[in-house]
Structures are given as structure tokens and as C-alpha cells.
Length: 473
Image (cartoon, rainbow, N blue to C red; front, side):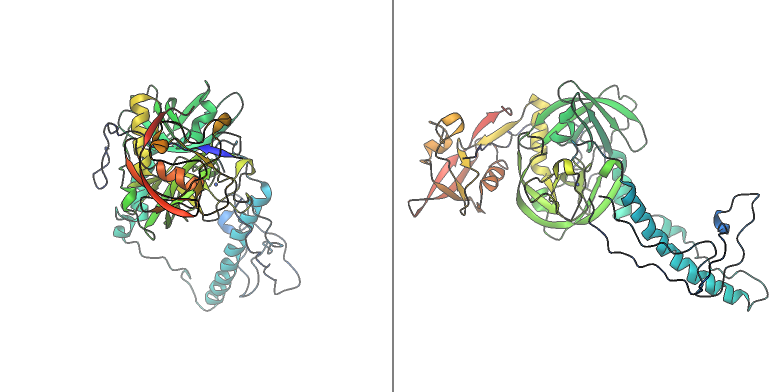
């Protein structure tokens, strides 16, 4: 029987230094196969010999002859034989080089589109040129200087402001290495990211942080919380670094349908910006890296913004440019639902990304900065993760054959017993063990919660005062 000890959210602590609030000025996871694009059939049986396109000709070499009549492919460029398969995450796995097949597939698709447009345009231009004595057949768009200045609340404006505060993290150890993302948390040089991003370097490995301007700094781990999948690192010798913390929003106020912006380094591509919406809230997610490490539990914000391996630890922003979540996990089509990160298969986004709500992440980060270790709220129970019914069942036995309900613990004092099925915590419906744990971890030690449970076919309620556990052991 698989059991899991539940645990929780840190006690309240000081805010990170130099934190701006939302609205204040900054101080401050293989993509799926794409549809095959049919080749463009030539209208003439023969193909003229290849001639370099004039737009790409090398100085000193002959340029391309005039374009052919309308409907004929440009000289020297025949349609491809159709696109190849596209290439196809988790930050612990080494970032693979893009497969040549995939890169070719994407390039072919782009080139086909360009050739089709170029062929039609070239034909029309040649037709028009034969009917005009002189003059250019192209039309340039008028440049409006105002159009070059993106409004601060536009996606471009938000991205432009946030990118200098988003970093790419490289972590390497004796056994593994990986790339992830983080963001400036305060003016003291603290960077907020995922625990699984920095885990390879946790045992004396090397951590480097690279900013959007290309400057790279060494960093050290301040604290890690495996259960929350949150870590804080700090820059070393970064006196010349311009540290502008990203403003933190209120994840409790996020609503389904709200716009989201994700920034990170998917597959090592630093500074990548994607957009979407909040698809769901309080989504129970039990995630792991596929490497046998301790699972993490979150009551996550779900987004369809594209998140891939390397995005882990990066910010999920709202339409005001404030952080509402820390991107942490994805559900991919080829992982069977058992590994939210896709494991070593390096699966990619299918529009199901999950972020740790920033309200939870902030509490954890502040505790790590203050004490160096996480603090979890607990009920003193072991949960049966193999239970298939509706709710979270307290195990028959605890870890190492001990009691499933810790004697004298919060659950014991509230009258809970082995075999009870918890169906509700306050107003949150509990449908599984991960949901229970993730919900508890949104609270802090000392909080009182009302528990609804079933025993012997009857429904009961009780009040539990949550206890605490320090550290991940």
C-alpha cells in the first residue's frame, strides 16, 4: 500500500527585501506533429536551372533573372517534397540538441509559406512591370512612429519590462545537469525558482545565473523545499548587477479566463515569451521529475500558455505584469498522466501547464530566506495514495509500519482514525490524496480547518488545528 505523509505551508515571515507590490514600479515542457503541408505543384513540366535569388545574392556574383509569369515557381526554387516530422520536460534532464528532423520540418513549413507568397507576388509584379514603363511595383507601408512605441500594458510592453528580471539558470553536479528559469525576487540578489531546477547542484555542484543582457554570475542555494518545489538562490559577487524585482500579484484574485504571460528558457531558448489564459484554479497536481525524488504537491494555477522543459521556475504573469505563479509542471500526451514533468522523455507542451500560486511560493521563499529550511502545515496523517474512491483515505498503517494517525498529533486530537475518508476541507472538495495534501499546504501551522469525513457509512465533521513540520526529512 502506497502512503504519503501530508505536510504544509511555512509560518508567516518577513517579506523579501525590496519587494514591490503589484501596480508599483519595479524596484523593484515534443511539440505534437503538425499537419502535413502539401507540396506546391509546378505549372510547367521543366524547371529552369537554379539561380540564386537576388535578395540573397553575394556581391560580385550574377543576380537572379526577372521573375517568371504568374503561377510559375520562382527560378531555382522548387517546392519541397513535404515537411518532415517535427522535433519534439523537465529541467533536471540535460537539454537535448534539437533533432534535425524536427528543425527541418519547421523550416520547410516556413519556406513553403514564403515561396507561395513570393511566387504569387513575383508573378503579379512581373505582370505589372510589363504594363508600366518605369517605377517600382512594390508598396511600402507608411511608418507611424507612434506604432513603434508599445503601450506599457500590452504584451510587448509587459515582456519588455519583465525580461531584464528573468534569468536562465544552469545547474550542474556530478550526476546530472540541467537548465531552468528564475526571476529576481528582491534587491538583495535572491532569485526565486523551482527546487527541481537547482537540485543537480545542491550537493556541491555549480550554479550560474545569466541575465537577458548576457551577464552571468555564480550563485549559491539559500534554501530548498522539495514538497513545495520551491527554491531560493542568491547571486555571488554581483555588485554590478542591476536587480529589478518583478512585482508580485495576488494569485487568490486570479480568475479563470484572465490573460497570462509565461517567460522562460524552453529547451534552452532564453527569453522566450508565450501567452494564454488561466484555464483553471486549485488544480491538484502531484509531480515528480521521473528520477525517483520526493514528489511535490500543489494546488496549481492551470494555464494554456506554452510551457516546456526549461520554463520551470519562470514567472507566470497577469495582464498587469505581476507574477501570479511560478511555472513548475506540464501534463504531456506521452507521459500517461503519471509524470507531470514528462521525465527524461523531454515531452513538450500540449496546453496543460501548471504554476505554483505566488501567494504560496512567497510564503515558502520568505521562510527559506529567513531560516534556510521549509516549514509545512500538517495534520499528522498518512494518506493511502492507492485509494480509488472519492476522497482521501487515511491509511491503515503509517510509514515504517507505525500508526497512520500520529498519536497526540492534530488529527488524533480531532478524533480522526485510520480508514476515515476525508471528503472536504473547509469549502474545498477533497477527491484524492494529492488534493488533500495540496490543500493543506496552502495553509500555515496554527490554522484551524474544518474537516468533513466518512466513517462506517456516516458523515462527520471535526475541526483540526494544523501542526508543523520543519524540513523535508
